[in-house]
Length: 263
Ligand SMILES: Nc1ncnc2c1ncn2[C@@H]1O[C@H](COP(=O)(O)OP(=O)(O)OP(=O)(O)O)[C@@H](O)[C@H]1O
Ligand SMILES: [Mg+2]
Image 1 (tube, rainbow, N blue to C red):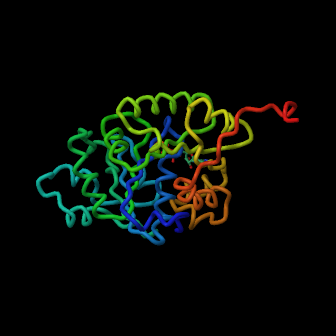
Image 2: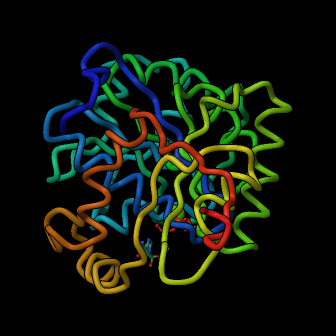
Image 3: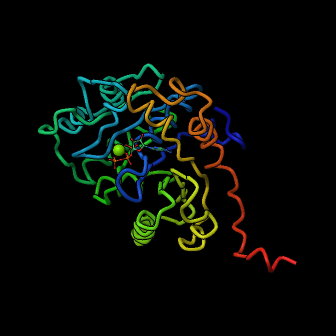
């Protein structure tokens, strides 16, 4: 995948995908972005949605090894163990998943996850963390460790309200506001406009992904990636552009101007 300014090849990047609230599409975006980037980069996705993360199931992986194998033996943690624990998806990217069996889930502390994040960014060129929508200590540690946080919302009031709460929390934790990339998913006919969202949240909207139930259902049912199952669909086309939009200049936010006052 091309980067507008050639920023991608210059260094390893860690991107945290955080949902304003549940169901905004963090898992779909994390997996789809990984698939797009894996064409040219060594990419790993970490499912950090402890207790409910379903990244592996969504992309039809049934991994024998998971993040918990790394967390269970911190003394053995090194690059070889980490690469050996990650499972390679046929889309060409690595995955450190949550266990399918929920009884095996243990919620780590921020101090336990930090060395995993630190090592992951040395092992792969791009690391994407699916943080889910909870503001738990793992998700916050991942957000603070990341170069950028994709804050994923829908254009609806309930999600935008929670996006605002997450922005406030991240700022209280001293994450610079310019590290937050606001992405609006499921843009359909209605909803709050990008301009109004930017005004309300005090952040530019870096990208919008269309509401595309046909494409989303097709990947849900098949467990395949957008780029394999529905290439050329509106959602896949938007996903393929996402990386460039994240690192390009956002559209300037025009001040609200009713059409009858333009002349
Ligand atoms: N742009 C879109 N258009 C239509 N459906 C979408 C879109 N994005 C995601 N979906 C669908 O919304 C549902 C939730 O997506 P996903 O599981 O990625 O969200 P999530 O934020 O990870 O949810 P959770 O909080 O449960 O982890 C899925 O069925 C997915 O296919
Ligand atoms: Mg999810």
